[in-house]
Image 1 (cartoon, rainbow, N blue to C red):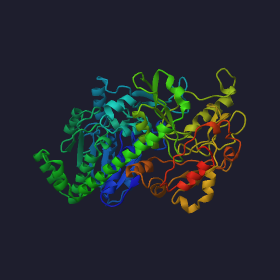
Image 2: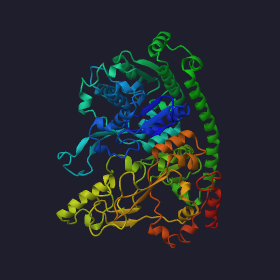
Image 3: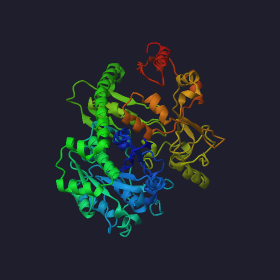
Image 4: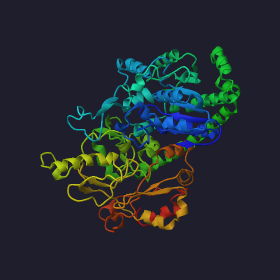
Length: 616
């Protein structure tokens, strides 16, 4: 994801289990100040399409950053910003391309030193945290190749190391404890398992980082003083290992500094950019060390940062003003949702416990004996090219009000496709594939191929079914959505159909011309037997049609997370008139929320859709 133009060029690198999405606040503020911002997804992280078991080495994991720095023009001196485990990827890029890096900023990040292997920081962190139980409900799971996950796969070479899966309690108490609630909700929806690559040869090479390359790049370490994950003591230990590193402190910042203290972090980055522009880095560094940073926030803005920081502060103040207005809008939406909740869901509240479900399927029970009136269960479904993450603000509001919330990722959408591990439980099977059934050796080989294609298939490699080819095209890749039919987990036999139907999309497409979609792109598969067309929303369309009145940071988040999607307009289910019946669909209470200023689906069209269903 790249935004902005002019100013300094910031390259933002996320930490373990996260992605470019975690920088959405900082990237928006920096772009508003006139800087160029590139927020990267490292391999098998964020919205990157690679599977975790496909990333064989730490260099492969860091390849998106290495390629981005290598492609930068010679005169484009970059400011690299790394968070947490992303600091190690920064160090690798600094060693390879020291002449292209003006400064490297380590935000509560792993800071390796010359003369020691890079893995020493991770090893020290694990030594300090494991004995104290700070990882809480985080899980360490084996990374298996999707080709073989059965018994004996580890002995056959199927095991590819271990991955860290962040637990919700760890994120709430140790990672995001000072961050806004909606950022914690967003993180629970989007984090993916991460590989620390502790046994990678790059991590063990003590001669990898040299004084001539890595040591020659200016380094700034941002200490998060309220960090409960990588403690302040741990952060200062890393700084002591790298003499000459400048230190900035942010009080009240948890480990997710870019969320809990986005304003302060942007001010630090603005000061660093102005130092690089003036070329008096070491003079300012010496003065900052001797003054021990006794200046106030206002003094720094007026004297130490230059015009760049002033613009940053102004843009962040405007964002805060928009947040206040947005809270009022969210409260109105919450009241509307509670008012329109049908009484038919009351039976869900008769249970003694209260379930809160995340998009990953995790369920926790909470005692509702003292919560007063029974609450409701909201199930949220996203739109085209989006996934559960787009509900993160509303989900936070409803959950804080005591309701159950399930934000779904539709088939082949969101984190369900991107997590990078095989499903925890086997899927549904047809009678021929169930345990105990007899299958030939050729069928077994077909099952092995079929178990791979939903996760890593291509348009040219489709599974061999038990009986006949599926009538729908196979999915192209993790970036393409599949059909909404349930297939056997070992072969491609269809055993259930779960389509929905509507005439609204078809009518809308007839009334809008091709110019309406601006820079949206349509892609067709190369498989002529099973043609598939996907739609990807373009950045201009997002900015002018969908998010034109939304906070700019939400537009930044959307640009980082939207993915190609199918509209299924030629699907037979959408063409049938008898799918929705009066005695089923017609008896359910329906409420249409009209977005008056919607530049995509106009208010007039929304009301017309409501008129097609009398009683709405």
